[in-house]
Length: 390
Image 1 (cartoon, rainbow, N blue to C red):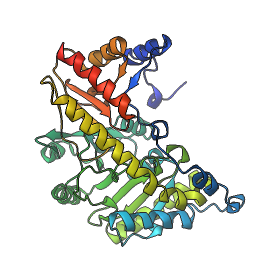
Image 2: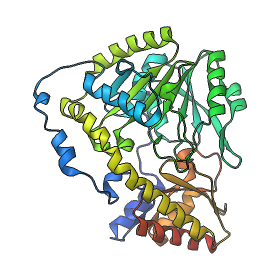
Image 3: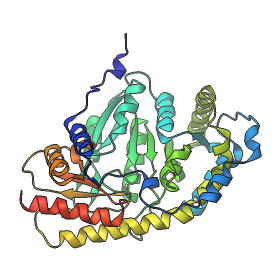
Image 4: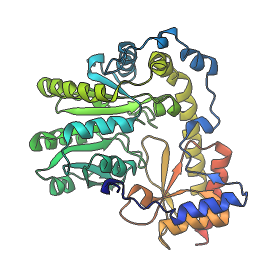
């Protein structure tokens, strides 16, 4: 009765069962996986945010397929102000309810059933589900660590086929926190030109760099057909507002044809709700309030992690350039999943095992850097104590 694309294993895995067991006994869980910014003690400008949703304009139905011009202009302004993309026009932007929907639009635009996309490994596990929905095959290319994470272009050359339609990059990657370096962008553009591929760039964490180095947005990349995805979920820490977008750049003829087809796709699905579109300019401005808070939290937690790591020798933190996560390299005495379950059942500490993000081997734990500072410090202490006796 049901399609093969939804033939998933729906039973709880051991990790989910352990979490349910711990919460069922009423234990306080130190959550070092938290990714919901609305629940980590940030200060939001409530009146401004809620007031922006009350525009009388919302009572008029104006179904512009790419989204209201005022909202798209605000997105273009964001790229000019924050990322020096002065050439971006609002007509090159399509609003979507989420980056997941934006991925869906691009997958439908580029791929026939059975076509392929190259995706980084390790990276966020959402891609597999999105690809299943669109009957697209994902072919991993490796990120390798050598005093920092690098794209493995030889692995990409081995993986590309006649059915490959594009390369997904996450800038910075989740969970490695690594940006695509300028030299890698040049190599990526050359690779895509040679194989007639598009670039699909996920930039939801772009604003959260840790150092002084500026990393260019792919929204300014006109060398090859490029689709850049982002949204308010991370930029303004407002995932519940469901505002995201898709920016199309590239050689003029290719970009124009892509936008024409995307216009039809977006029109078929109908534009997002009016109140949040009219509020988008105000909501985007909220980044100026929320991002400093998150950067301070991330830097404080990273400093605390490094302080505690300095007192032991069992594990180390890998380099991170941006984003909301830190990676621990831990001794391989059991699988990452088994270690994470032990930490949960015995210490009430919740961490993500590396295999959640398709690390090719065991020995990695992923920690959220946006957790409340005291909770983060206590959780890290429990993790390191556990590892020191392993």
